[in-house]
Each structure stands twice: as structure tokens, then as C-alpha cells.
Length: 460
Image 1 (cartoon, rainbow, N blue to C red):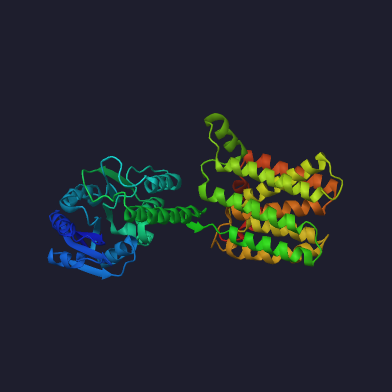
Image 2 (tube, one colour):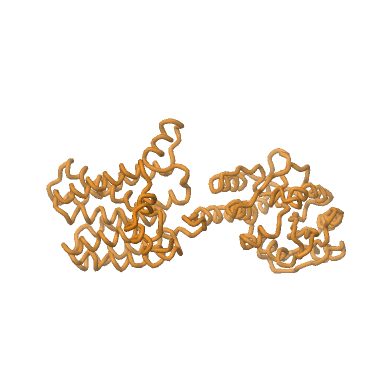
């Protein structure tokens, strides 16, 4: 690689502006190549680009902006890459202001922040979604999250694996770079580009852009940093669905009561957990944390919603399993508390691979001593959890741990006598009180026996 600057310009039907943009880009000091990627244009964009002195013109079928940027990135040869939109025209040379912070290594990426020019052709939904997603997932607020004018070091793209597909390229680039530890700054620049109007084509473009950003938002939300600092996917909802289906199908075959309640509770709490996995704030945790956020700041966190919804599902499940017996408010409340605490207990243990699954399998093995059909139905499904979770290939997340916890709670509530359930309830209350004051992971690390056991549950 050289010490110059590679300019990459994705273009689609920009024959009117591309010549001026190329000329302006070439005037920037240090630029050694200008690469134009024609993303399936139906006009003379590629031809005009060649005649205007582009170093290289890459023609490809219409694959979207992300694919065009990737083609330019792969074809470029310099350590500093300057991304420019094709419709900047003569204002493209103002992007030179983005280069000094990057070349001097004061920042890894510099983004042009455009001045506010009044309302454009859209409603601002895509911008707000992008800005809020970046803020929620990285903690950094961006003024111009969709700006395509960026200077960055090649190592940024090398580490994050290039650009995301289609029209979410900028949003994903910002999130991935910040998560990888790179520094991003915004620089206000008086640049101008063609704005989409209030036309059918304009609304269609912005609709596609919003959809692509939404997909990136969901995808990146389901990537969670594990204890090693690596981002791994949350996939606990997949085996949770399998677990619910198994109970729904096999329960009646084996003559097990409450299989329908089990299946619906597993699905319900998995969905509640999934919502918290996607939109939850990881900086707030524990019952006191979520309750304190509500009381002190009047903010309802997704964690608080999860606690409320989880409690409601536990109460409904407790009512369902008691309806055929001696139905009293005391028995229902007792079983609801047991189910709710079991659900959260598995969540508390899901801080290292294998812990939550090992706990769940241990409880199931003990319950199978009373009724072997329980283990026969549930253990094969949990084996799916164990395979991926223990190897660190996925995280259960709240969607997975909630499903395991509510299943254990219902099975214990229906499988044990009152005295045994009371003993289990006391243990669960003790675990929750302990976890509010001390770290379970620290406790395990301080004990030689627990640490030895923990190391054998999964990757560490």
C-alpha cells in the first residue's frame, strides 16, 4: 500500500454530475486515484466518468450502494480512502477537510456533516432511525449518520470486513467501526448534493433506505459483546421455538398435562426477551437498576417491561396449572413467584457459555427422577442450546434464558410438593438477593472448586 489517497465514488444514473465530481475530487491534494463504480446505470454515467479522467471505472449490475463501495474498496490501493457521492459536483473538493485528522491519526474516520438546508423530500424517518440505532448500540450521537462523504483508514474496513449491503452501508460502517474501537469524528462542511424530491421515485428510494437500515439495526442489535470482548450473535430464540414446538407436539403424546401452557409460556417469554435483546440498554441491570430508572428519571426501560411482562406471563401460567386443582389466590401467587424467579435465575447465570444450560439440565435430570418423560422431551432440545452456547458460537440472550427459566419454573411448580417448592423458592430468593449485592462470576472465580467446574462448561 502507498501513502496517497484513494477516492471511491459509487454512482447510479449520475451522468449530469459525475464529471464535475471527478474533476473536483482530482484537485484534492494527495489523491492518487479516483475510482468510479457504476452500479448498473441506464444512462451514460460510466462513459462520462471515463471521459472525465477517472483512474478506473468499474461496471457492475445494480447491486446497491454497499456492493459498489465494496468493489471500490477492493480495487483501491492506498491506505487512506475517501468516499464521495457522485452528485457532489464542484463541492466535492471540500471533502479535503476530512483528510488531515485521518492522515495524522487523530481519528480513524472523519465524516462530513452537512448544514441544515430545511426539509428535504422525506420525513426524516431513515435519518432518525440511523441516528438512534447508532446512539443505542455505541453510545455516540451522530449529526449526519447517513453522510456518504467519509475519509477513513483502510485498516477500519479490513477489520470490520468491508461495507454492509445496499443503502445501510453508512449506518453499519459507523456501528461496526465504533464497536471495533475506532475513533470517529464529524466535521461540518458546506457541501451540496442533489436532494430527492417528493416524487414517487424519491419516496421509493427512502423506503428502501429505511428498510435496509432497519435490517442493519436488528442485525447489529442481535450481536452482543461477550466476556472476551468479541461480538457473537444472539440466537437463543431459535432453540426456544424448537423447545416450544417439542412440548406442544410431544406433551400430549406422552400424556403430560400443561404442555400447552409450557409451550405458550416459552414462546411468550422468549419474545419478551428478544425485544429486550434488541432494544435493551445494557448499562442498566438488575431489579433495582430498572426500578431506579423509573423512579428517579421517569424512564421505562425495556428491562422493566420485561420484568412486568414476565411477571404477567408467570401469573397466567400459574393460574393455568392450578385451575384443575385447588385454585386459591395463595397457590397461584406462590407458583407465579416460583416461575418468575426461575426465569430470572437462568438469566442471572447466562454470563458465561454453558452456565445457564448446565443449570437447566441439572434441574431437568433431578425432575426426571420423579417423571422420566420430562427429561425425554426437554433434554434433546436443550442439547441444541448446549452445543452452540458452550462453544461460544452464539449467546442465549434473554430470549433463550427466559425460555429455559420459565420451563423449569413450570415443571418444578407442577412436579414437586409444597414443602419442596417452598425450599426451592427460598433458595431462589437467596440467589437473587445475593446477585443484587455481589457478582456471581466473581464468586465462581474466587472458589477453586467452582472455577474448576465452570471451566468445563464451555469456552473461557
